[in-house]
Length: 101
Image 1 (cartoon, one colour):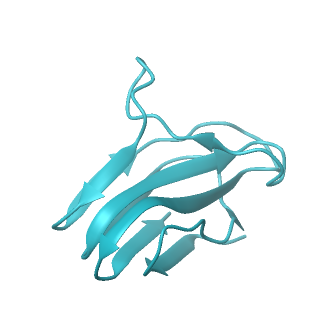
Image 2 (image 1 turned 90 degrees about the vertical axis):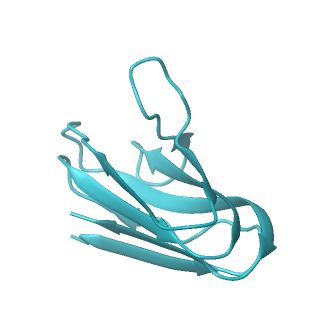
């Protein structure tokens, strides 16, 4: 089971979905100018939802100009848990993203 997802975006595109474990994960993003979302799937990678920052449902969308480090917990116990990064806007540079468990 994968514990690390890395992506380097040079355009607005969707990254590769990878299996992740239930529980906590850490996200680091840096470089470039653009917007990236972390997306989660509970059905083996068929349907993806934007991860939220808090219980109010604020979407985890990060505008990159400098390094951001975000710690998030994920508790669902399911075999079909996948995650991916989605660069929804791109201006310049390389948007580097990493999820680690």
